Each structure stands twice: as structure tokens, then as C-alpha cells.
Length: 187
Image (cartoon, rainbow, N blue to C red; front, side):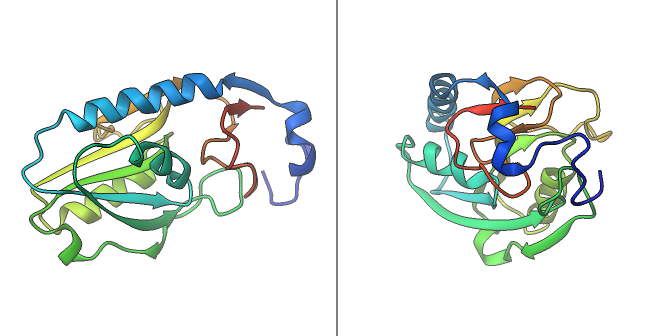
């Protein structure tokens, strides 16, 4: 879809009038709590280095961090394929990982969605070059379709599975907006 095209998608101000809640706030909160329990039960050899993948991972990371009971250090990475568009483009790095933040540390990357997996896999590969003691990925949602990486790459922690629709809320945006919604919507 070309930028500015409105043939298939409503204007951002009107999108909630055309959207349906596919995952309620309560179900999202429950999934995040279960992920926190899984992460808390891991036997990490040192404080866990968590990287929030901006901008989408911010909501999820913020909700998850408050439930973690293990020592963590928090930072962020920023790579995108979307910008303000509704479909993926070429990967662009805004903030790349630094060797000193990853080398000999257990690392957990947190992102909003595992859709086609291209962005998250590229970020994980970049981080792996700096030799962490372990590298895991966690996502709030996994989109249910077969367009996943041919390499077999997938997140270690997945909160929810959602249908193959255009979704937003809980960190995922609609044309740059609505990341703040506490439920997941689809159009």
C-alpha cells in the first residue's frame, strides 16, 4: 500500500471505529504475567541484560519489567522495517548494540510482535556477534501464518498467538499511532 493511500485502511483518527478487539486487556496482562514467571524461573548466571526493541517493544517491556524478580539491566536497541508504513521495508538501524553491553552477559531481547521475523532475527544475529553467554528473545505476540524465517529462527518466549490480520495496540502501531492501547485490535 502506498503511503497516504486510504483504499484499504481507515484514517488513523477513525481506525478504532473500524477495528475489533481480538485480545482483551485482561488476556494481555495474563500473558505478560505468565511470561514473567517463565523468565523469573530461568537460571541466569549473572544479571540479565534486557534490550527493549524500540519502538514496538516499549509497552511490552514496561509491563513485563515490573513483574520480574531477578536482577536485570535494561537498555534498548532500535531497528525498523516499518517506519510509519503498514508493511515492511528494508531494515534500518537507529541504535545498534554495543559489544560491552552484550559480551559475557545473558541477553534477552524484547519485542512486540513476531510477524515474519526478519527484524528480530537480524537484531539477534547482530547481538550474537558480541558473544553473550546466552541470547533469548521474547515477544508479546506471534502472528499465526507460515511466512516465518526459513532459518527456523523463533522467539524463546511468546505471550500470545494472534490471527494473520493487521493488528495494533500494546506497542504495535497503526500508522505511527495507537501503541498506547492496552488491548490488541485488528482491522
